[in-house]
Length: 176
Image (cartoon, rainbow, N blue to C red):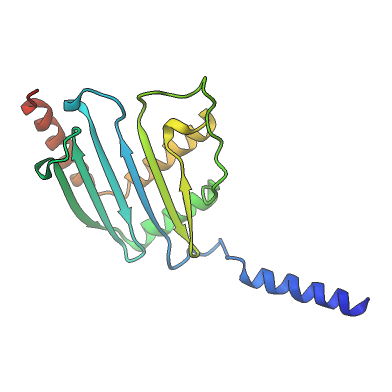
């Protein structure tokens, strides 16, 4: 009986030692966010992918319209500081986003043509895939939308402004 109790204590301690310490940001924390406008006329459609790596390097890939042509793709790298990366990690941890049990919307809530998204978080060697906005329940939709805005704040404002200008020029020059 005593050996069984000791064995249980040792197993519990071993499992606790293997569990991630969520208080401290892991060295592999990274994210990839994909977002698109949803169903809009081609001249108003765009999509982007934001990638942020543990080495404080970010990549912003932007595509205009539905075209697959290289001339309508744009990619820029940017740097963030350690405090921004830690702030993102803390936000995701505090909002309980490191999970894979998302509530999907039922058919009555489905938002056809709404913005699409996908977010993959990596922490402690595990990937967490958050579904598209259009697939989420209204509660999780609000949480995901806030997460997307939080991620967007680490992108330099001049880069956002350049992309808005390029999008406006694309819309003006668009020919069917």
